[in-house]
Amino acid sequence: MATTINVMQPELGEAELAAVREVFESRWIGRGPRTARFERMFAEHLGADPGQVTSTSTCTEATFIAVQLLGLGPGDEVVMPTVHFVGAANAVAASGARPVFCDVDPHTLNPSAEDVAACLTPATRAVLVLHYAGHPGDIAAIADLCRRRGLPLIEDAANAVASRVDGQACGTFGDIGVWSFDHGKIAVSVDGGMLWARDPALAERAARLAFLGMEQRSGFDQAMRVATRWWDFDVSSFSRRAVLNDVLAAIGCVQLERLGAFVRRRREVAARYDAALAEVKAVRLPPRPPAGHEHSHFLYAVQMDPSVRDRVARELYENGIYTTFRYPLLHEVAAYGSGVRLPRAEHAAAATLCLPQHQGLSDADVDSVAAALTDALATAPAL
Ligand SMILES: Cc1ncc(COP(=O)(O)O)c(C=O)c1O
Image (cartoon, rainbow, N blue to C red; front, side, top):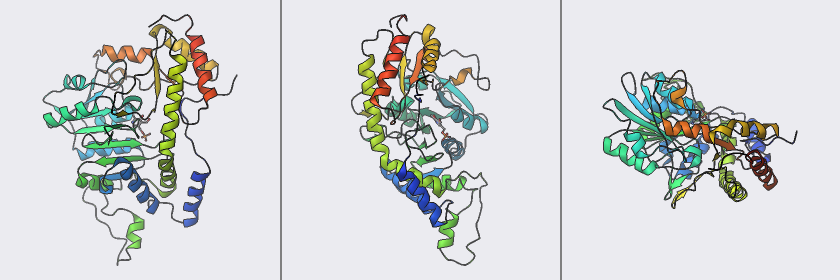
């Protein structure tokens, strides 16, 4: 079998190792100055005030905190696209609120403002969208809809760490944004998340909720203050422990410095696939972002006739090429299934295949994926 080409892959090297070594040598590995630096760097990347940003152990934890910040609970409905990460629905359901799944555009796999509006009821208390593949989608129109209806908007920007619309970072269109730095994302801290809140008071509360509800930012800050009884703390709302640490944050800082280069390489990979597959009649290429939209190129998702998709995935796998489909439809998951039909999402989920897309791909890798896909589609129906 040829060398494996991963569908997702982080790029970590000497700079990250040196940063970790420096943390080990500092003898402070917990939440401390590097975590604070990671938050400041990310706030700057977003063009946000550092007081609006707090780090978390994972994006899933950030989403649980977002749901807690909005006070969602039994009787409340949260509208979200059925093409969504399961952890987002879990965060809603764990609060007692009900996820209500809307349909998506069959090509972008993002919902339009109309798709969201179609699911609003008097019980709707929030909207929770993502930016599929890193494509910003209709985020400005959805944010506008939410503002007009007085509904808080949570953006799961895990796909969209570098996506913008007219210069504004995805994740900052609504009330709360969450990001992931797990092992599969564009920039990784191995595991890690960020939460941005429009209201700095909410962001400050988020930091407390991420750290047992304690009214202090970190043990390090507390110790450095050299007050009397620096061991004291107060808890006015109890919570879990979902903080990041300095080992992971140090990696995250280096990765944020490299993020621009990562996205540039991903853009080149996407353009090379576009050119190599342009004449293949049996494949539909991913949508190009409209003017003013900046894409993170997290996924490169092509479409084909649903009758051949699984066979094509298997043939590529047998040639050492990993592909996947993100995200299996939540309205069909046992925990959330309600018998509702969402035909456009269902068609897209059967037709879409995410090809390898990461900054570690060489031009030769891209060419061999494109060639293997072209071969596998030789007898497939034209689209
Ligand atoms: C869209 C989306 N949201 C959230 C997450 C969760 O991120 P984490 O692994 O940091 O909890 C993921 C992870 O794959 C994701 O793809």
